[in-house]
Length: 348
Ligand code: NAP
Ligand code: ZN
Image (cartoon, rainbow, N blue to C red; front, side):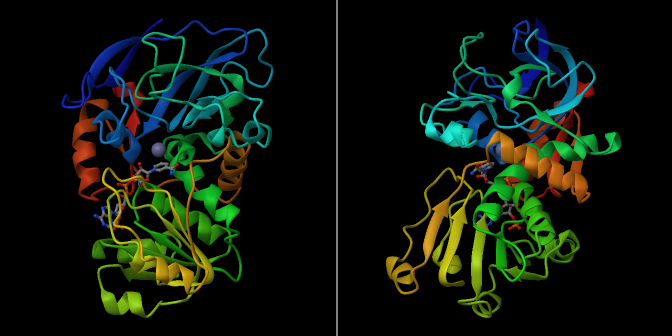
């Protein structure tokens, strides 16, 4: 089925309107008419080949919300008209140890990303949510229980929400824990909201003084300008856990220094250029860890969506027309977004 989409034909070409083909739904498929799709920094990294391996044409987008418009004969969990979401995953082997534990993002046989992943569909790689419609295996479709008027603001939960939820839960952010969130962008602002809702004492680290007041409204108990050495020093040795969402290369020692003994700095940002090698002594003297975390599994994504619906949590968004995606990218690169751009699919 011919479907309108926005994507790029090459790394040095802008994101423009193009037509793509979607498969007819198979027995286990759910066809979704997309209402909104968030713009993740990973979209920009991918579409501009800042990471290796981008296949073109590239249609990004993995913060998808919309309504079911058809289901296959073996689909019982969804029906036409249901409000649903799709995140970063549309497939995995379903039988490895990770898949068995509901951690499809760590599938040892390789998960299928919502874009730039392997597929039998033309053109041989998956095409994402900057499009009017998508067809997805039922096992990778999420139920959305937020009020209908919040739908656009729910979209970013499908990546920014789960990518912060998963490590915050894994490292037990909650009452009695001091938790830092570094970089108050799309991921970071969700991290602040979620860590606050989980009951942790939350400190937001930002390079943008203009975000200070808002970070408090998002749920931060304290806000630190990470460029100010004195403000940083005041928190030395005090954190149980720090989640670093920064999308650019920077000195990690500034944050490992703030950890308590046995504390963890978890990286989720994947910058184009590597971070300078961290100071190993700083880790050894304190048994500190630098860790990483990748999005989240399907079951925990549903758990996060339900938690957010229950606690009234959505993303802070600026809705844009599809023709303005490149403008949004340039603003995202300047940290000039509060805090996630979301494409209104009706503008395609
Ligand atoms: P974003 O909206 O651009 O936010 C990144 C934030 O980092 C900015 O708002 C800014 O916050 C801060 N920042 C930017 N440049 C900086 C610099 N040079 N030094 C220090 N801080 C800087 O991006 P996003 O969509 O949240 O994504 C963040 C990163 O996570 C990207 O690399 C993305 O690819 C990655 N990601 C990873 C996963 C995963 O599963 N691990 C999933 C999704 C995304 P302040 O203004 O507050 O300083
Ligand atoms: Zn993302």
